[in-house]
Image (tube, rainbow, N blue to C red; front, side):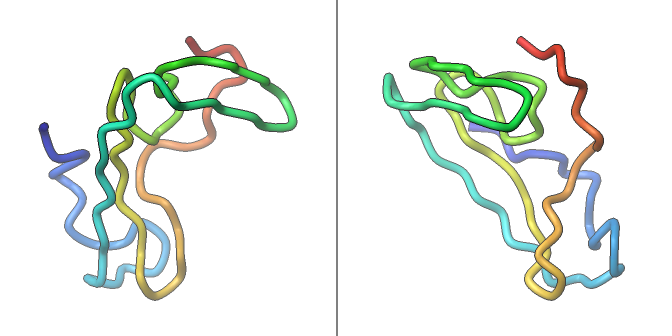
Length: 78
């Protein structure tokens, strides 16, 4: 499993160096629900900033709680 966004070495919001990386393999048991999108799925949705396929992967700041990545996420994602 590859690490997500290795180029991010500090928080994009508060510039803290205290980042945590979350990764996991979900196999056939993932769903995504938001105000704009209900995506019943067996896979992690791609282009949502949290991984894709069978893997959840993201970094977040231990100081401010901001998930790292490119935001905002477009409404039309696959």
